[in-house]
Length: 108
Image 1 (tube, one colour):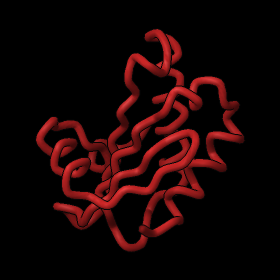
Image 2 (cartoon, helix red, strand yellow):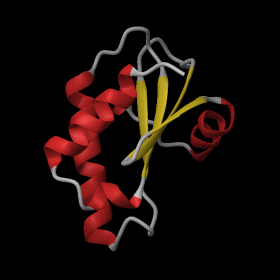
Image 3 (cartoon, one colour):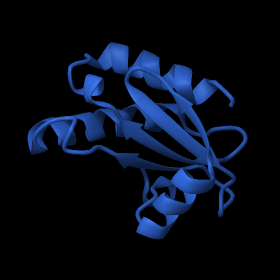
Image 4 (cartoon, rainbow, N blue to C red):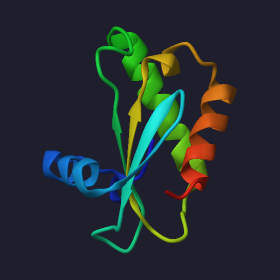
């Protein structure tokens, strides 16, 4: 689990990042990023019902959280929202990790 300081939890923050941030997409997820409000990187996850039922959505969210926890700290710090696509539900952990790390490394 991500440390509390590295999580985005407020709806206003999610909306700000998705609306004003730069977007990079892939087959498993879309990454929205913007300049941080704090001095450290923060992450948020959007996993809609299109991904699957509650069990599947929570599994995808836990996997995404573990992937970004291993990537911390990012340089430079950014606020990042990862929106999982339905294909993320069927991807194994290694495939998901490779896809997300590639998206985090890409700069729009």
